[in-house]
Length: 450
Image 1 (cartoon, rainbow, N blue to C red):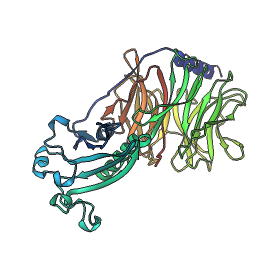
Image 2 (cartoon, one colour):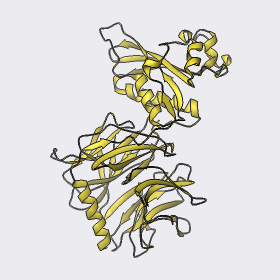
Image 3 (cartoon, rainbow, N blue to C red):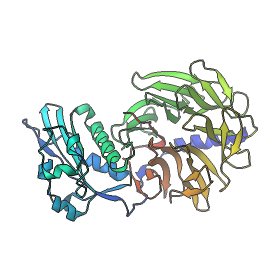
Image 4 (spheres, rainbow, N blue to C red):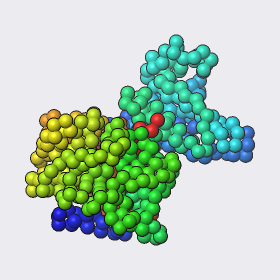
């Protein structure tokens, strides 16, 4: 218990430390696929001369952040087409890009825009079959045989940027066969001493824009966790002088207390079906993993050990959880199976492994791993135990995985400065998200929201 209290104290001290946040670009990769994102043409009958946001740039930034694509610099583009008949295939083949995205934004009325965009492969003349194209959608020119996507939609000011993320998802999936995760959100805790309530829970788009404050308090907020449908957030709040697990409905701004037992209430984690919540409670004297049935509020205790058991995370099939425990002398990852109650140690390499999450395929986990050079993000194959170090920074923590398993968001330290970064799952590419005015903690990536 003394050890557990020390861990909590260290956590609270770190939350109250004032720091300016910088954003770390970890590294690039040379084998990213070259792609051209042409600035979209804009038309308006009013005095408006530009759209509210740069639709094409949002797409380009999303695709670059995935680590799989390298958008060509705008000044290097050979042309500025906005429709399929304007595409000069010879010019784009000479540029040696795998795909071209171009489009047009038309203001239909104040605050209402028609956005059309295409994805074209300049080298593949069988990208789309004429029989699959609705007659009259576009002129039957030779370039049409290279089209991979044809999209046309009407958007408003309130969902303009969101539809740009959706467009990036559509393009990403067309080029990779994997569902995109740009039209998602991130929850995080910000600590800003200039505010009356310095501890604030925010939700933003996956690129950090459009942040909305969900809750604020004079006392710490920790461990936000998304419900499977993305409608609710669970988090730990100390607003009443002790730790409590709160559930908040994001649309209705309704809050309810889920766990306020004697001792510590921490580390909430929703089950994949949304019917249960794993959590850490010390109501019986020692921090243990419990599962609560959200309909009945009935508790089921999973672990019974004199050690500290914490940070539960569900497997994608909901049949097991991984958690952090020092029962072997140092923090390591263990796995408990719900049907049998059997508990197995998962990690053996390294003095410290903690904060694990499953990848969506359930075959691997990502965790904070201590090596001789510091604390890094690392993945481990659950079948063969092989560990791969993903980051080169030395004080990584608070990881969360994108719902398609392609990216990880995490917090780290660069010099003496706190930073946030994302890293591709292969560890070969990192990109920034916008910084804030305070200290950011505990990022949590939402599930798919479309």
